[in-house]
Amino acid sequence: HYTMDGQPVTVSPNHTDHCYYHGHVRGYSGSWVVLSTCSGIRGLIVLSSNTSYYLKPLGTPKPGHHIIHRAEHLPIRGGTCGHSDDIRSTIADIAQLFQPLPRRRDAWRTMKYMELFIVADHTLYRNQHLNLGHTKQRIVEIANYVDKFYRSLNIKVALIGLEVWTERDQCTVTSDANATLWSFLQWKKSLRARKKHDNAQLLTGKTFRGTTIGMAPLEGMCSIDNSGGVSMDHSEQPIGAAATMAHEIGHNFGMSHDSSGCCVEATPEQGGCVMAAATGHPFPRVFSSCSKRQLENYFQKGGGMCLFNLPDTKDLVVGRKCGNGFLEEGEDCDCGEVEECTNPCCNAHNCTLKEGAQCAHGDCCQSCKLKVAGTICRDAAGSCDLPEYCTGASPYCPANVYLLDGSSCAYGEAYCNNGMCMTHHEQCVQLWGPGAWPAPDACFQDVNMAGNTYGNCGKDSQGRYVKCDKRDAMCGKIQCQSSAKKPQGTNTVSIDTTIRFNGREVKCRGTYMYTAKDDEEDLSDPGLVMTGTKCGDGMVCNSNKNCHCDAGWAPPYCEKPGLGGSVDSGPVQRDSELHLHPVPCDTGGAGSGKSNQPPSSPSSSQDRYPAHPVLIPQCHRVVVALAVLGRDCI
Image 1 (spheres, helix red, strand yellow):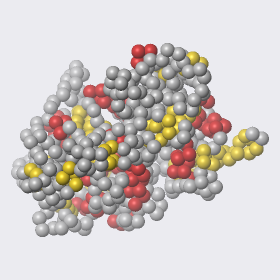
Image 2 (cartoon, rainbow, N blue to C red):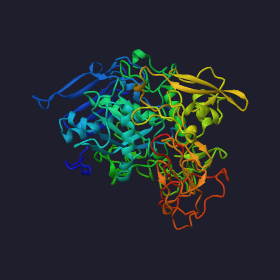
Image 3 (cartoon, rainbow, N blue to C red):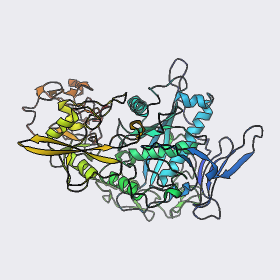
Image 4 (spheres, rainbow, N blue to C red):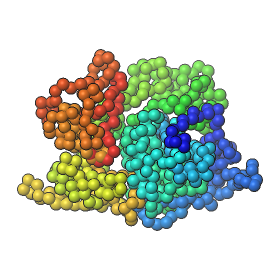
């Protein structure tokens, strides 16, 4: 939180104060419970998919008394991501949301850990009657629900920090969800400098325009710039905001809105699916097969690279406790609560190893014994990732490493970015299906320099469409060629433009995601070229859609000798230049270097890499951020 003069105050968590729980109802197979006992008992009790209850303190004038009622009688404000209907929801039948997914060897075999940081804005703090303790408690309750949501996807959500804007908002928070999102993501950069995290979410007490209740970038997870979202705290009970936050985090994980035919797991009368564009009645209870497939594809192509390391348990906001599923100081193992533990190597009641066991957790632990050194424990997820191997001394797979951002991939047609090889071709296939191919560069220039709804380089902070400069046209709305009648997705329509190119007519096929109101979409336009996509030799698209040049070449066109950098980042200083060519590990542990001369030609090699005004701290493969906020070519 902050003092009256605006100075931040950091408070370490009390690790002896644990009052947040997951569990089951004794005698009810398939039941589950999410409870807080911090100030009375509050939470959700699910006996079956048809029977669930919400328990909460009755409050004054009868402290210690509680009220319990059927979950379907608890109204939760609904919202849309493209529909204008005023829908109200309940948490009835939410139990199906947490049904475990079948595991596949590659995408689902290992538990992943998302280190989450949640920020409460000043309006939310005021809505909690300026009570810092109550505000913090509400945030942790919301995080407890979000964790339960993602356990079913083999992802543990670890709340490693929270912040309450007690005096004033630290970024612009308005009724415009889009402007609020990008303002928060810009502020998030300063947060990362003082608190490492995988994802940050802003929880606001303000009401967004229309029926929008949240917004997040698609596939933003682990990105320094885009791993985050904003959600309204729109309901009396915290599970409402938790469901919205889980939906927005789903977008960060690459899950788009369900299209027609995706949600076969639940009928509209049963609540539909979690990633529906609009919340339904009753509350959505399952992830659709499309969402599961999108999440798996996201991991298989190298997404979510930051999720494979175990969080430092000293950073956990909630108190330490045997049974919380995190291995903490003094524990040999932790397989969760006694009722949920199925680990044959761990004593759940005291978190000790069973007799004869060497280990209980980790990809390098098999049948309670350590795997032999050199055993592969994590396959490479695509051409920009690297495999990891067991050491023989630890049950855990080494921390995930992958090719340096800017490394060449796809036979020189693309660059690695956050462990993924981003190409125009791949995105065209995602939008149009097999056989789709990027249109000629002239299509990108003709369409995206218009700066309208159908051709642009994204929106500015005021929600206005931005014209692409010629150098950035390859970073705007993606233009494809395809024989398909329409793009994939029920809310997506084709925008076809015919141009003259090399003496013939060429059809440029773009996409437009239709919503009832343009400001009610809760994720970034999937028709925009993805951040990190190559847009020229030595250049990639950043989130500003401006051109960031290799060291030795001057922005904005990267055609003349200069210091490098972009109109966003400023020039690359000689003492902070970074060459992204492989660096041998006998250089004293530093991965940075200096260039005395610019390359002989801007296009002298297909394996040229973009430069960044960042130093690599030690000699090993690490991730360096490529993007800056917006839609530019760097």
